[in-house]
Length: 154
Image 1: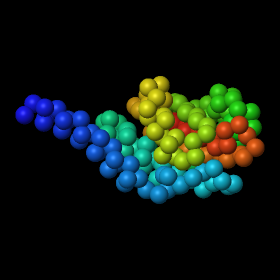
Image 2: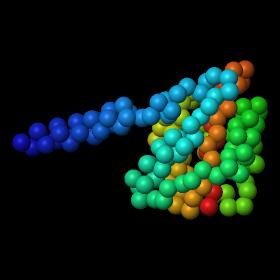
Image 3: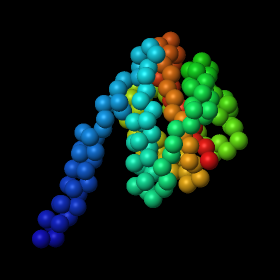
């Protein structure tokens, strides 16, 4: 009986992962490594909000002013490859944190990388954040191709 319970304890979490992956909206697995990628920012934010609410945190809302700065940051990131310099424009009043990533073709992969990084996960779970912006830029001639920026603000 004990072995059966132990076996179930190992299988059930794996089954949940499979179910979760298969239920992702197509917008989250759409490839952004194309010219003029069109990210469904609301679908991306919904995934972030699911993660935040599962940890007892508030949901975020998209912010158009922060979005402009995040989009500019992805262009800068693609051009110079320096994520820290690229996110300097996000340092607006009330800005609490930003995340960058490069090389992932889909938002689902990008989000998984952030969520599975202890440091980045803390940013996703910032309890002071209430606004967000999510941007992607593709440059076929750059080192990584696809560049992502997430900006969070109070």
